[in-house]
Image (cartoon, rainbow over all chains, first blue to last red; front, side, top):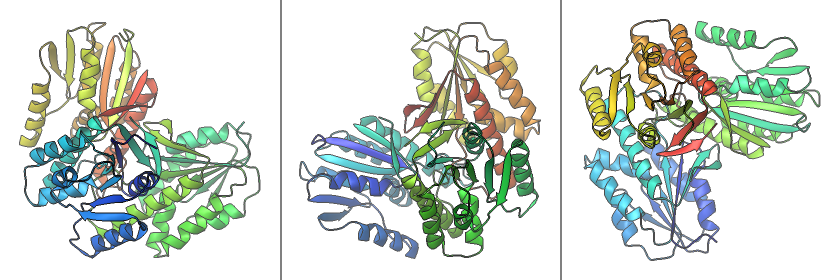
Length: 171
Length: 171
Length: 171
């Protein structure tokens, strides 16, 4: 059994198996497990993705929606429970669309994550290894996501890069 | 000399040296070597890429084209011969353009790859580490490629992430 | 202290902490440190990025601009000084926009980098792990960058893949 209060950060590309591996790690611990969903369904495609993720998780999970106040949600959690946050890039997208101060929001979140109160598993996307995007908004998002990933990795106890469903230990 | 029946999966970005490294691994074994090409030349740029790959390979290679029926082609191969499949993402593109059932095709392929009958080397692209693509077709391809890569990595004996021409062992 | 004449190559996505980590490695050695900037400010966004990087570096740095003649600049450096080249993909962009022979320029650069005369740290971007770009120029750049990264990694003593600010040793 992993230590009680540890942050595991899982980063990877789209369909790299981040969520599934995080679920495997969390469910290796005794339930109940808390799933913090940051997704907001703007369209049918997103509805489908959310439903798919939800159906894969079985019994024993409590789902909390936190599309924006992820820091507050984490701060209010009970101690010593396995928590899966899925995922940081969607949370960041929500704040960007709401035109919030990304730097401020990311610092608040990193602060809470730097003091995990249980085995916490946090999932995020690597979005910076393609060609520089044409549009300025995408570039701004890419920069913000990269900075956030650095902040979280810096305070994490374990950092895993997911490659084709397999974890590569970075820290 | 590697074991006779082992699957090595090489994944990496564009121009990361996947094909060249796979060729190096295959040609370290005694010939004849079988090269299974999945590329279809739709335009001049593709013709050039195919010609470049072909010219780099020297004597001792037998090339088989398998743009669609890769599973059947692999199933019909003789035992105990080094085989290089280059590459899965082009094969997936061909099926997508032909509007085939991708889930079914990927399962068929993964099934054959789970029982390699020789030292088989399979190359694929990581396409999920950039910004979410604008168009739905690209997103669908990215998802399908990611799932396929997970399926193949799961049954592979060795998984290598190619970074700037160098292999990083993931499994 | 690292050996005197060694090439360290740092590759990673956008905002993966490449430059900051390279600075940390360079400034662990005695000053003076030489910073070779390849960036050219075409627009305000680029001006901001350059200013940000410059402000992060403190005392002890000498900055040399080398948007095109990077090989010549490196060849003219004094021996045994920590040098940070930031970055190869911007240098390649400059040559592409100037419509120079990329193959020739990359070979010249790789040749100089194969004989480092001090602890040299070279930063570059991984740009090939997203979806194939729509436009031909982006594809050509992606190919050229991938080939250049392979050439440099081949002659480097150490190759680090940066993931969320953390180095993963590839070589």
